[in-house]
Length: 125
Image (cartoon, rainbow, N blue to C red):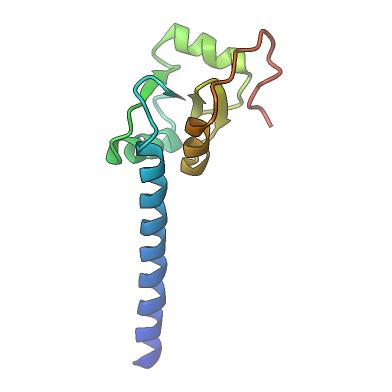
């Protein structure tokens, strides 16, 4: 009985910690995000894009979706970055492959990056 209670306590504590950390990250993004600063390049079938959509919408973060399966301009912009996949985030001139709330908060707090004529700023690892 004592071991079961300990396991429940540990698991509950871990879930609480995860929730608290996500809420802090969401608040850090929400207080600085302005409409038009966050664009996420997605596809119709990307499960990671779906998770990022849920996170952004669930925390009332203003963002714009650019679906490369449905929009030729989005596809061209995505391909110009040379990224190997989606979600690809564009925030104030900064690019990030994959959704990361901590990176998003930091990117929103930095000065806008000027576009480069080459793919030297590609998010490709």
